[in-house]
Image (cartoon, rainbow, N blue to C red; front, side):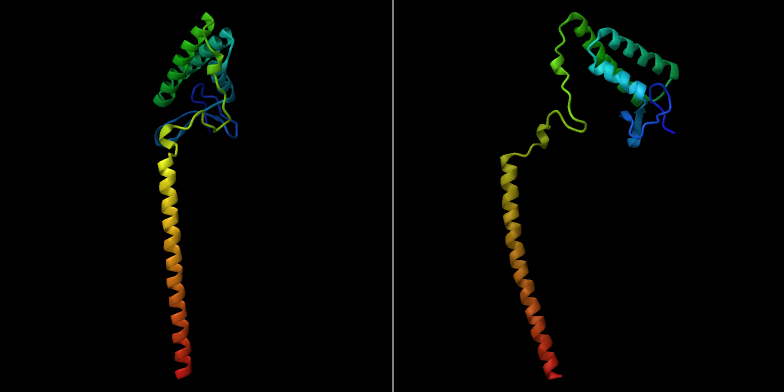
Length: 160
């Protein structure tokens, strides 16, 4: 049975939230309660609710005494970022437009190394044209081979 990486509660959801991926691609799952707390920490607008969620996550993690380095480091990073965010919210200087929501599985922005350039498109088109010509020539050659085979077969049948 799967357990929450923060509070060790059983994870009963069919598709639970994943905190991080550990060694060999093993996911570290979150129970529904912890996932909701992380949502509050990263997207909440009320300072008291954010602070309460941060305290609860910290207490749960300390109570379980987890030795999972991947989960611990991920929680630490999230809470460090949340602490800075919380301080800005309390000061009144936080810009909530920074909390851009995206559809599940959608990227905020495509990384530059994955963008296709004009040169890449031109090379792809040139290669596609070359492959079409090669296929055409190869098709004619196979047609010629087939015709020769049929003629030889007919000649063989007649001579027999």
